[in-house]
Image (cartoon, rainbow, N blue to C red):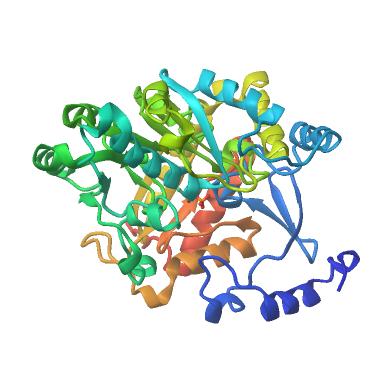
Length: 451
Ligand code: PLP
């Protein structure tokens, strides 16, 4: 089959089944889940091989900020193609990645002056961990090199490389890699009552061993869309300072407008020592990530090359010019449109729309942060009883949404709503109406009250 035949849905599905191994996908159920075969996109819609259109309700996994085929980003990539697609960044530089670094540090929280590029959210976090560890080995002649532990929060998800997996709540998918993982100190999830006290106790006891505390500011996304009490990120910054440890904020999911501001760190009023960015950085077009850090950390890596203080990490496509061009166009859109000013209104509208779902008996909880929300399905919300995992209610609800023209992907029994930031009011209303109808179809309607 050549590229000219890529509109033949049946053939594509056959090839997919025969040759492809998908990420985070149980293949015994894959075909039955009727996967989308995307051949095109237009604005906020995905178009499949049979010509059907689906509202992209999860922004193509939380990264597509302004819809598909956004003219400004398409154009920026085309113009960059006329110059060069790729050249190495190892010991060299390319123009668009250099100018992008300047724009990023200008917009990021104060004090972050250096940009280290990589390719995805996992590597952005992996880089932050390696930098933090090496920083303590090299700073002040290694006076604090005992700082080699990382403190994270229950159920956190920071990616799939071994370093970033080690930070996570080690769950079903990652438990089997335990021999490869390094030990971390786990505070309870920020969504759990008593987290702040437990965190304080851990920091008091182990603070002197900590290289860094690692947190997703505002919202733990893949953990199940777990929101944090107001001021939590600031409190974590204070505790990191008290312990003398670094603070890593992972804005892979909440960065680039998702929080309602360009960066969640700014929204939470916190400047980290290391900031991890990815996903929306290129408007959802190309894989690119960045780990931003302070001059204090950067300086600890200087010295004659023979001293070996260099940060020995890099990828073939680090700083890729096409991706950098897409990231520039993404920042242009934030700067040149009213999107950021309009976001608070959209966030409030989403909250109002979601509120109407609370009448559904299966809706156990609704958690929203900025233009992102998780709707948790429960068999009995009074007792907090989950549905049996084997029923895959979350997947069923997303299947029902698909039949109604909306593409969603759940986290277990949490239905995730994470639309492009540019969704119109009508599309937002349609999205939540479809979620309402789909939960009703799969889990039942409210019991009618008779007079
Ligand atoms: N960190 C956070 C907070 C994430 O949500 C994710 C992905 O969902 C990652 C890291 C990993 O990013 P990637 O999938 O690009 O490796």
